[in-house]
Image (cartoon, rainbow, N blue to C red):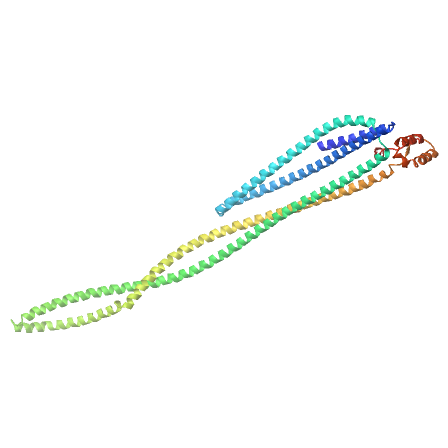
Length: 487
C-alpha cells in the first residue's frame, strides 16, 4: 500500500510540475533564466525517474518476497506432513523396525526442525527488510518532497528554457524510461524463469528421491521373499532329516532292546554255570571222601558205585550240555565284532538324540524367524503403498505448480506485449512536438505567415534564443512543451 501511495504522489507531483511549466511558458523569460529553468527541469525529471525506478524495483522485491514466503510455507507444510507420516509409520512399526531406524527418524526430525527454524528466521529477516524499506521510503519520500517542493517551485517560477532543448531532453528521458521499462520487464521475466526452473528442478529431485526409495523398498521386499523361500526349503529339509532320524532312533531302540535281552540271558547262564560248578565241586568232594573210605569197606564201595553211577552219568551229560550252551553264549556275546557293533550303535543313538534336539530347536527358531519376516514384509508393503501415495501427491502438486508458473509466464508475456504496444502508441505523438499552435484566432494567411516566418529562423534559434522568442511573439504563434503534448 505504501508503494502505491508513493507512486500516486509522484504522479501528482509530475502533474503539478506540468501545470507550473504551462504557467511559466505563458510568461516571457530571459535567456539566463531559461537555462537555469532547463537545468532545474532536468534535475526534477531525473529525480522523478529515479524515484519511479526505485518504486518499480521495490514492487518487484515485494512480489519476490511474497512468492518466496508462499514457497517456504508450502515446503514447511509438506515437511510437517511428511514428518507426521513418518512418526505414524514408526509408531506402527515399533515392534518391527530396529533401533537404527529410530535413530534415523530422530536425526531427520532434528534436520526438519532446523530447516523449519531457518525458514522462520529467513521469513523474519524478509519481514524486517520489507519494513525497513517501507520506513526508509516513507522518510526519504517525505523529506525529499518537502525540500524539492520548496526548491523547485521557486526555480520553476523563475526559469524557462528553449523548446528545442526541452524536446530533445524529453525524447531522451522518454527513451530512457522505455529502455528502463524494457530492462525491468526482461529482468522480471528472467527471474520468473529462474525461479520456475529452480522449483521444477527441486520437485524433479524430490520425485527422483521418492522413486529411488521405492526401488530400494521393492529390492528389500524381493530379498525378504527370497529369504522366506530359502527358509521354507530349509524347513522341509529339516523335516525330512527329522523323519529319517526318528526312523533311525526307532531301529536303534530295537537293537538296544535285543542287546539287553542278550545281556540278561548271558547273566542267567552265568548264574546257572556257577550253580553247576558248586554242585560239581560238592560231588567231587563227596566222591573223594568216599574213595578214601574204599579201603575200609569194599562192599560199601561197590554199593556206592552202583548207587551213584547213574547220577554221575546224568550230571556229566548235563555238564556237557551246559558247557555247549555256555560256549554258544560266549561266542555270541563276547565276540569283538559284536562289542564294536554295540558301541557303534550306542554312539549312533547318542548322536541321533542330539541331532533330534538340534532339529527341534532349529525348527522352532525358523518358525519364529518366518513369523518375524512375514510381519516385516507386511510393514514394508504398507510403507511402499504410502510412498507410492506420496509420489502421486508430489506429481500432482508438481503439475499444479507447473500450471501456475505457466499462467504466470503467460501473464508476464501479456504484460510485455501491452507495454510494447503502449510504447509504440506513446512514441507516435513525439514526432509532432515541433508543430506550432496559434494562440489566437486568425485566417489561413496568419498561419502560413507563422510557418513561413518560423521556418527560416530554425537554424539561428539555437544560437539566439531571444531573437527566436521575439519572432514567435511577433508571428502570434508559440510552441508547446512536451508536457502539453503528453497531455
